[in-house]
Length: 398
Image (tube, rainbow, N blue to C red; front, side):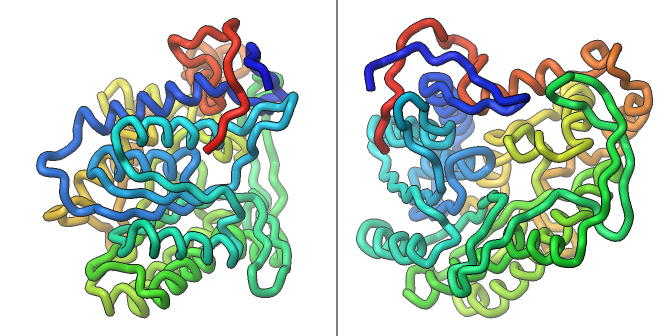
């Protein structure tokens, strides 16, 4: 496919294409953010597997491990390569850039582009780890998917974003029209709850760790971590107490099982890290959350507390996962990187502004414009320094 200028294409609010150079610059910025704060000496991580490694917290985790510690990394993800005239997905371009920079800096990086829920992905990952890496010091589980085919039964599960037990009414930003509108969500059925847990809960995490342990690929003292979110009371009906929250409770239960059945034998640990809310492809789809994410940055920036994915992972890896670090946990044993987000003064400011937001003042009293730019930048658009009129190669290989 010849080089071509790539202009943003959208279906409603969602970008349906991606810009390779914009994605490349995003990865370069994240690498620089890690290198500039990397500890010396860098110790504690040599071989790292990241499941769900192409965007968001998973991509940031891989960058933190590789450029913060010099770790050999394997990333597993499911992304779309380019197919004329369509560009590849943003996650594909992110990974292509990561491989480019890893070669430049003489870091080992391997990737598997396939369904991480499948037994085939686990088998291929095991072969790469045995041949190129073993043993693993850290396994990161950062998989986000709306759908899962169960590897044993073939049953297909789809997740939903709904409250549980009762309907929920609040206001949100209608992203296509940029209007602040009321939204009412009907409660999920028992089957929808069960299906969401099957997709987003802890079963697959546990399957990965069991497979790796059975093959002898986990180092003594190995650790595994999965990512979660709790959030403030305004989002609880749709998140903490909703279908997603039920899946995250299952993730907590899986951590306990992995800890007792596998990690205790290795002298290692299995933990859930509760991270802050950030703009992702998934978060934009959750009602109420876009409005919250348009208010949260204002309160955090005012106090010098705002963090994106890479800053959160820099804190997680350097303060909690490096040699000699003592992870600080809550009563449930979870690492809490949402501590700044949930500060009473931050949440009080959001609560004060929330009822005042209307369509007319949306851009004046919130950071909705920043939300839009950050969302588009996930796909490589509106990234500083990129000439979007210049032709760019879109047919990249991993």
